[in-house]
Picture 1 (tube, one colour):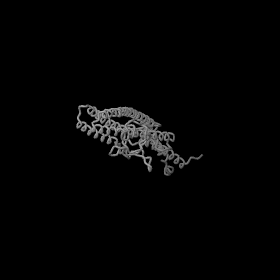
Picture 2: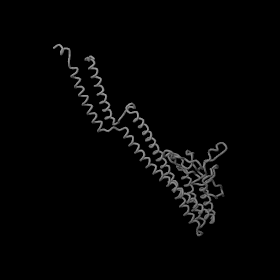
Picture 3: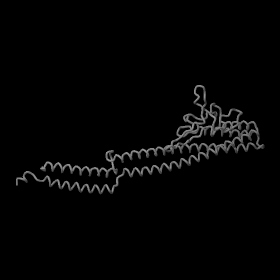
Length: 324
């Protein structure tokens, strides 16, 4: 087969372009720090990276959910702690008022402070987190109590869904198949609706609130104020017992909040560990070995320079060289 100058030049240019393309790809790896930049570079590696990036994004979302849940639980814990302080003070006042040595005026003075404690309970019941009321189940845009201490969410013929349900648990997704209830319904903390004169069964965690009457907790304070103003020692002693029931319930709720908070803390730590592991896998899949890349680049530069030098000798002869 006859080898012409044109064939030699074409072959030389083709090989030089291959060398230049390899060197360009290596320089791109050096500048980006990645093994591939296009799906065609490594289809399997790109597919693995997409899956790992999705897993990392999911973990970051789980962490945001968990931190949000932690903040909600911290707000709830502060509210319950305030209620505990209120009941501690109310119990002190009730014990003081139960002493027969107190005059009617002294008991009325205590009644006035008990009434202010009731107002504080109403305020705590309407606690919000990020603009959402925390004790109203799914109806986070509506307060729990009205200004008189009555449940503001009631059922009626036109809108029966307005009743506050005991099953309205707000769940946060904190992991794959891991959902956690982060709210406490009004019945759990403040008790069921108690009509005037009805103070039995203070903590009923399953009864739906379908009227606008006061919660049992509010009624305890109202009845205590009435007994204090009436100088009713027996009623004051009964009020002290009811305060104890709610105080013990609040302590149990604080313990439950502590358990859930610990679990959320552990969940955050687990998510951090999982995220770090996924990012390590992603780095191994994507990141180029810079020492190897630099060595390959130097070698390819040498090959390219050699091909340029060889090509210069191939294309050196001209027509004048042949005429000599």
